[in-house]
Amino acid sequence: MAEESFPGFESIVRLWRTKSASLPPSWSDFDFLDFRAWWGWLSVYDAVEGQPLAFDVRLWGTEIVEVTGHDPTGRRLSPENLPDRSDPTAVSLNNIKFARFLLDESFIGVTSEPYREDWGPVKLFKEILLPLSSDGDENDKILFAGQIVNS
Image 1 (cartoon, rainbow, N blue to C red):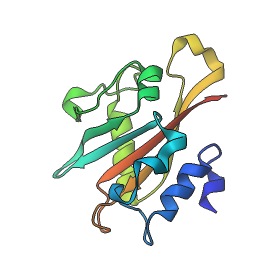
Image 2: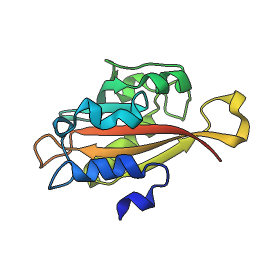
Image 3: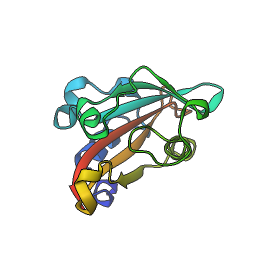
Image 4: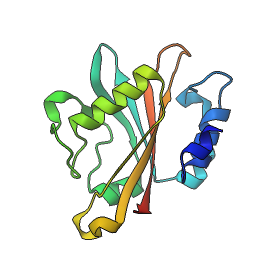
């Protein structure tokens, strides 16, 4: 099963896989209560039509705000307003390129990085990225679920 390939994220992958007969599911297939175990740890980006490297941030979880120190909810992320390198204080262009790749290929992805210097080398913020499709044809959203793990 795909869930076992993503330690720590088994429940969200299982939920994602069961929400639609054809993968990926649509954001509208989910109910807020479906995510009870993940409240505060989810983000959702909407792909901007005609702009492959632009996303509108629909949701940025409160726990993720605590970890990252920023909240881009309601903002458009595009190459013009993003740093080109990894930056724990902002979403980077590399992050957007990876999200776009996952949408284009219908892949699940995982990222991890030490978001805060005071964590040292033992703590990481890890996220799973799951594509979503409103029409069952093209992927147009990406769901992120995050957690803090010991490395």
